[in-house]
Length: 135
Length: 79
Image (cartoon, rainbow over all chains, first blue to last red; front, side, top):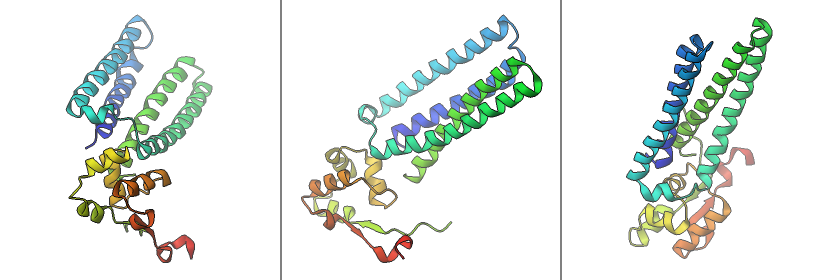
């Protein structure tokens, strides 16, 4: 497995965990300072784990980590981003609909954050699939 | 699922063998792409840009048509 594919796996798994943590815990406790602390802890943990795991993977393949993305990897990145973009648009439209139905702006905000997280997770899932397929 | 028919084929594996069993990594460094990209090109999973195709040919000291060939008879879009 290439360095970039490993990075995509790391980002995908951590984003799924972050989205799950936000959807399960954060949603219930968003209305107060505890909710804010919970969300900040999730973000901080996500960022720290991303850096830590990517450093570990980069140490295993230092030469590959230093090499810039070539044309195939850039194409994979673009194709996966396009999928993520459509998911984000759908998620944001759904969030707007939720605000309209429930009349609660917090619901819309939470669902928009969730839409961003899910769209990024799907972007990295797309990258993994394209890397597996070779293009 | 039926794999897509390849209309662009290449002789990279043969040329690597003829150049002293050049590794994919060696070729990747000469062409300035990753080893995985060379592997994908060699297996016909990815068609490189013209620039990379020329760099591959140059790495072997060969002409582009000696490395890559296009079979229009197999291309369903050309029918």
